[in-house]
Image 1 (cartoon, rainbow over the protein chains, first blue to last red):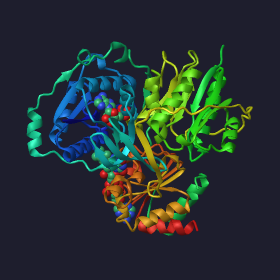
Image 2 (image 1 turned 120 degrees about the horizontal axis):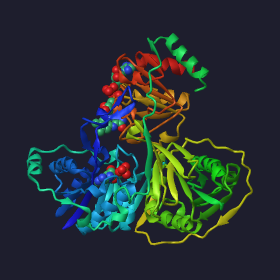
Image 3 (image 1 turned 180 degrees about the vertical axis):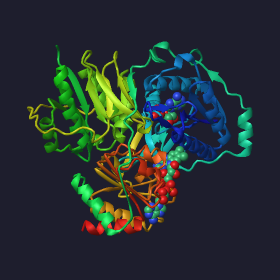
Image 4 (image 1 turned 135 degrees about the horizontal axis):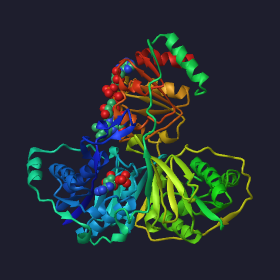
Length: 263
Length: 325
Ligand SMILES: Cc1cc2nc3c(=O)[nH]c(=O)nc-3n(C[C@H](O)[C@H](O)[C@H](O)COP(=O)(O)OP(=O)(O)OC[C@H]3O[C@@H](n4cnc5c(N)ncnc54)[C@H](O)[C@@H]3O)c2cc1C
Ligand SMILES: Nc1ncnc2c1ncn2[C@@H]1O[C@H](COP(=O)(O)O)[C@@H](O)[C@H]1O
């Protein structure tokens, strides 16, 4: 049997984030969580590859607190076959170095696989480091910003990768990790049957000991980076506002931009 | 105190050095003055422009280390990671800086793991902590709603990727030319870059643009987008779009600004026929000056616009184009 592994992250829904006007800090309590939007494209692509290949298992996994299980159930409802929750107090405060290590240990525990899929980046941290990081721990190639799978077989793929000048066409032999962008596909919505199955599914919890993750590489102590300070940038405020679309309005705008040396 | 190496891992496209390389060289020279630094620029590419290399010494480099080989003309991540790693292990740098471009973001995270280093992504500010000489790296998270300052106290190199256009190029260093050429080392790779496609459609360097002109659902259809293009052309801007315009198929994905598209911070941003949903805002809010044109006076975009015009885009934009003739 062939196997695809998708890593997803539960993130706060940006649409619901509010800034406390008094303290100018982010209010996170009561903000609902969603699957990181980019990870939805990774899930969808895995499901499409499975449909193409047949005889394929899609495993979805996340590292997070116990409530991250919700995200896994949602992924199951879309059609993923199995879910794994990597959860342990020891994992808390892991940076991208430690996170990618933990996820790579989970891959080793899972065993054989053909492709690992992640999102391009998570919308909370926006780092885009965990995907390539996992590949680096596993010593496999990684293809970032995948916009199209031209061809995908169990041991060969031809892929388009988005760059700032256009895109690259890349050929890969063997296992690899790819990070998904929005252009890749259009995610499906869960079916009723999927939802029912997801509700009942057993989701195993894996801890550090179970995956053989060494203490020196995980959690706060295993993370090379330290956050010294977090602050909200001063809130942006509306400025000049004019009504009307006549020539005077247009002239005023142009004059304003010229005065400010913007054009 | 011994010299501390600060290495800028530069970027070469088609033999030309990417401007973010000079920006980081200048910043490295400035930081270096405070920590007895020695600035080296590491360049991998093919047929690297000699004049461009010269400019590195004007902009702050003490030394350039160059690996010029046909195999590095395209971005095979494995070749880049292996060859950069070798140099970094030899030079044992204190700090490593790279542009947060698609290339930098593809290879640097892999190197950070191999070197057991801390890596901070997409920095928008760098500083030195006076008491410790550590690099303070400031970066946005949550789409710019939160800023975090990060340091790496116990591991070297301290690594960052830095957004293009954040730092100014300083041309006044005039350091002595000092170039070391290193042989490319072929390594095992299971990937092959067949082709690099420069596409007009996808070549949307929004992250680099000084002016971005974005259109949204209010533009109405694909044909109408020509007025956004015309206006952008008039003011030397790059065309962006809201997701609604992308999803409608009026303009391709590389133009998308926002949470699931690109983050931009130009000097001047136009939001035309865009309501300003939070997912759009997180991708453009840090622009220096925002102009909104929208017929709905209650559109959220006006809350963050420096200059808002409540009016019909089909009336106002053609007038702007005409006035600029
Ligand atoms: C997970 C997720 C990720 C997302 N990521 C992104 C993202 O990356 N980028 C993004 O942009 N969106 C993103 N969105 C979508 C976002 O929520 C909004 O739906 C989208 O930004 C709306 O686009 P719009 O402003 O063009 O359209 P609308 O909200 O429909 O606004 C159109 C505006 O045009 C105005 N208008 C209409 N006609 C005229 C006229 N003739 N003259 C002047 N004004 C006119 C209207 O008053 C209105 O305000 C995301 C959503 C989700 C759920
Ligand atoms: N805690 C996590 N658990 C599982 N996958 C993760 C986790 N953090 C990040 N990822 C994956 O790595 C991608 C990039 O995340 P980031 O590097 O944090 O921007 C995400 O889109 C996920 O696919």
